[in-house]
Image 1 (cartoon, rainbow, N blue to C red):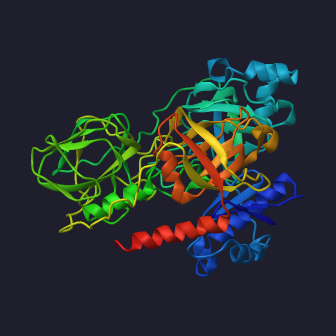
Image 2: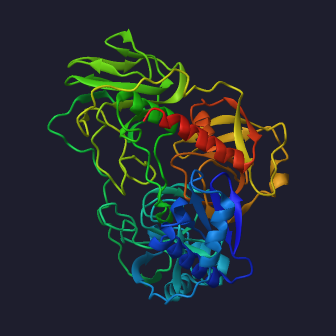
Image 3: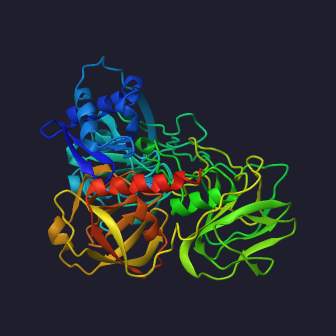
Length: 534
């Protein structure tokens, strides 16, 4: 086993020299050992997540508990420990091959020099095994595709692939759990529910499962699982009179489910979110609103208290300007509106008592890519989760400053790819969402430095800066994919991720190289500062 550091809090485990099957077995076994109670009672309590991929296992840990060297030494004896082989699950997937459901099967047939009937026979007759999940919740990378059917991804990805599409690319079969952009070759479609958040185990397939594809002559769409709706409460306190552009309920997210392809989600600016909650008198992780501009317009249905934080959108309560990171009291009928963007991109509203919302996989955070939660719509009514505390906490100004153009952002370079000592200059483009911000770079040599192209998919730590083949780096944020095959350029310090999130399109920034140990020190310092407020 070969561990290497990934950013400030990641260890990427690889097994050079082993066959693909041996590597997958090692990954599954080590992941089981990392979650065993006996390991968790010791240094293993630092392990927050382990993300399996094709040839590696990413272990994410709490830098306040341990450093990478002692954790790697504690993990090493777990590798390859003999265990009774568990019997893999066998799951049958009915597939309607070809036709409108398999628009690319003729392309696959031409590339392989075989008839479509042979493609169906060879694909359905092969022994398939789930290697790992990634890209989107419930999306399984299924190994075992016959080499004759190995074809590259499409040159121009589709903007929308229908849910249930069965597709091939490289040496894998994949099934799209929900509508999504995608560049794989569509050979059929299934009605099997790959992802259903109403199930105790939302993903139908998991690493190590054996999959058998059964050809059928008819395909009939089944109702798709619906995202959990906001909970109805008999005593709502806030009415949404205008929904804004992107308004969601967030808490501190749902780490621990990356092995299912589920991103941690949570707020784009965690520090501002925490401080707004503390100002309102809540615990720092209480569910609150996150929004962009145009922002929502809200009306109090009863007396309530709240605090605002994050982006400055010129907040007004019944026409009077109000401060940020201070507890504000509203009476029934008061209207909160945001008049214009002044600074920042993501604003927060912390309702004293928290916002009542259903929990999915232990969190109320909306994850738009996963279909968990959703945008707040006009007419929604929001209730308190619990009775509010008597008062809030005083938050000194300046604890969560909004960034300006040209700001320096600290980042740990990827192994073997040192950033220039003066930093790497990037410009943010309009191509952005909660998953990540695409940038442009004045350094024309980036692709020559990294070699460009793609790699076998690996787990994605927070703050990863990917470099796709077009040479335009992507800073991955709250709803990032859990695995990816683009080259990793650097890992932004977690305390500085909020700075990128709050910058507008066109803003310039400079990635300044730091050591991973410095990133861990910054995490500890921020937590110490927050602990002073409870």
